[in-house]
Image 1 (cartoon, rainbow, N blue to C red):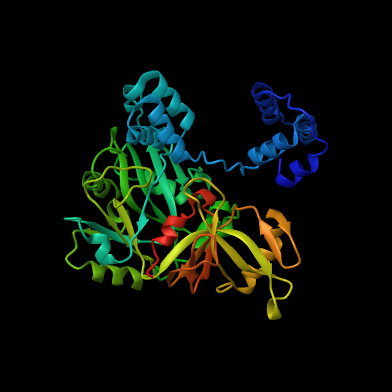
Image 2: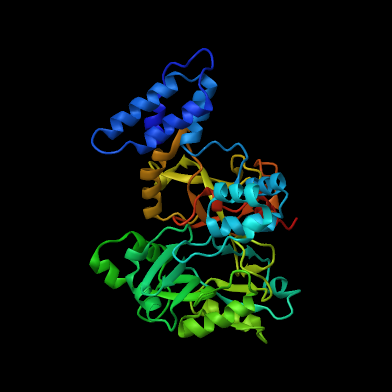
Length: 448
């Protein structure tokens, strides 16, 4: 049920509230279970009946709930802290259980019923992907390595994040968002099936390479995950670069320090380990090597830290020669001159860490190719919230990667900052708005 379909179902509203939570839950369960011939009509009938019994405020709530735009502040991070507080267990233990189970409700029930013991019983299961650990941006290479006695420094590649599970001959490949893409990445599954082990869980990146071994554009790598055309599959073979090992031959390594996980990684993955060094004598030379090979920069990691989902302080830091941010597209303005007839100038928002609407931090039309302008003009109206003669305001769903020279204080935008020389690099089809950088990340780049 898309947003436009739901909006079209809105009609007269009830003058007084009569709906109960149990009724709404039961009806939405019936909608979800409706399938087969005539199911679309039946779903519309059920939802139309529900909305007709709702007050205007209830209609607004239900519409935003069903389209994923409720945005009342109950983000996952907030809910994790709430579970910890309500059940009197450490927040790190709750985060670990959510990382492994992938489900807040399951974790909450375990914490409420069995406390710390129940949460510690959560363990990695082969075939059930683990939420990925992420890196925080560093201002410079010197700042990244400062304070880490023996840092692990690796290439930062512009590929697609993968997590591979093997149990005997059964292999599954998952994306950053935990989607199973095994059927689109048969060569990766075959490669892992041939590694010297019986069971393993590997974390890494995959890239499509040119004939001379340089990385192809990110969009070409991502195209593999949606392609069923044999000629495209053959033309864009994927090469894996693994940087972590979470399980090896019956031994879970999530809670082990990175240096132990890295030992297991080198034993099992061999030549498929991402280029890098432990405590390099000259990290700047390694950075130059990465950039010369066509990659983004470096990753700097603390060897004594366990694997933990999300961004965990200074455990993993990414170093790039220029700043990039993943921001949410809030609106687009109709272009002028040679861009007349195209949606062009983008309104950019950063994620509100407290769960509210994205906060606007700037605009840009730089970096938009003719192909991107045409794509925006076709696609953006599908996400329209409202529009006027100049601007199409959109649901905050699209994430775009923006390169910038810096950030400065500004009263022009609600975020209190403005992007300097911002330009579009690409749309991040592998991310949604919940993965965008926060307004705090943007403000941290401020130098004035």
